[in-house]
Length: 204
Image (tube, rainbow, N blue to C red; front, top):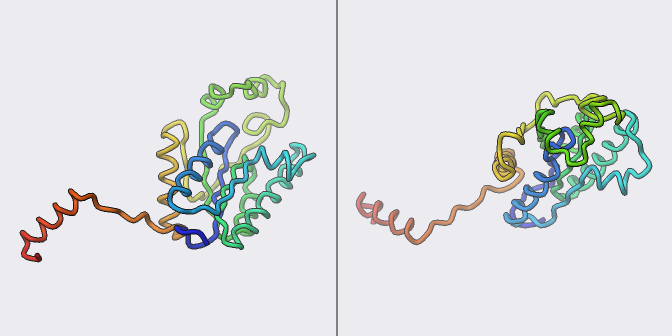
């Protein structure tokens, strides 16, 4: 097991397309690697669809199958002590909860963002096409997205920076006991100031 982590766990990012799940997943990965956690995997929804779920469409049944496949991989990694991060729209509560039960050490992070911001961010123009009825089965427009009831964290990506959001997730992992708190190292100046205070109190 790598330095800095105590057990396998899954961080599961859910939210609409363009909310910032993948960007945040990579920033959290960066922060965790900096903490010495090297055996860390990212499962991105788009990449998984290209490989693990190639051939699946966007019906509810196919979406559920895709999420179950990602969940199965997460469960396997977690079971063997490998921390992992999944970033997938995963629009349906029932399947997300099914994956939560399957994985065990599960941290659900809802990346929330208002539709008007998503439309502005969308360089491909898919939201505008979906709103115009040109794209079918588009989550958040012509297909439902069911918000989580009790996620471990809600990230409002239109209100905070990626770094701020990632720091909140790291703090949550510490709080839940999945990673060790960062050791604080005092600077030479801080050590000298502490020594002075202790001396003035008669301890030195």
